[in-house]
Image (cartoon, rainbow, N blue to C red; front, side, top):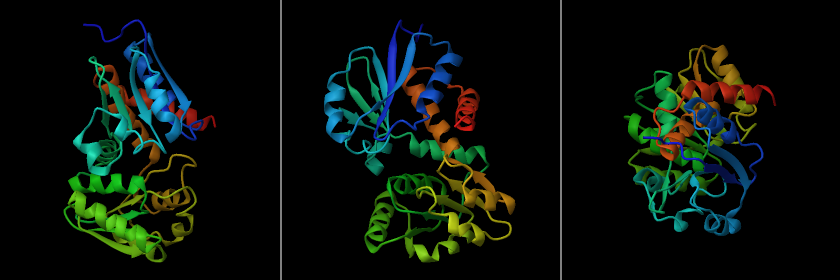
Length: 278
């Protein structure tokens, strides 16, 4: 049975979108899988433009990748969402089913778990999360599956602390919150997930202890971050944002094309080459 009709389309949507590596990863997968009739683009779309964009799509469309600010805005426009996406109220993957339905999923959460498993992290007794945005809630959802004890979230405000404790209750993870000023204390945890914007953790690099555990820094540009460099220098294991990006894209390719497994190694090579060329 052929999974490669004459012409199929997919794309990544968001705003801003010019920096996205998704086209590089998905096109590398299509090349490796021999899906010559498939194309993958990128479109600058914000919340106000999303309903019209979706309405304008024809039957040749297989799926969409969504980045900020669309991961929550898309939910009312879908026919169904998976339990994983519902758990964090965030959709990063839309698949158009053969009967014309729009199904939303979240591949960030299983992508995080796959990236950690690849580096040998199957289970931890406690963990720390730096930050409290949308990626932090996905991190908590991932930790709900592998952390047997408490997660400490380091945040900048009381409102953010309340949000993270709320997510913890909803996801079944015991969350303790602490002020960002105390973030260096996170580094005693066997797993630290940094979810903050570029530059935020740079001042913490000097505080990395000897023989740290595993750092999962979700940034991929600039890379390596100062924190990731200090961590590796002291012998700790580092999982980066490109690892997350590739693993979540692998799951998207499999859902959109119906072909599995997606070519992880080829997608990673393409991502590394694109970053090196920037």
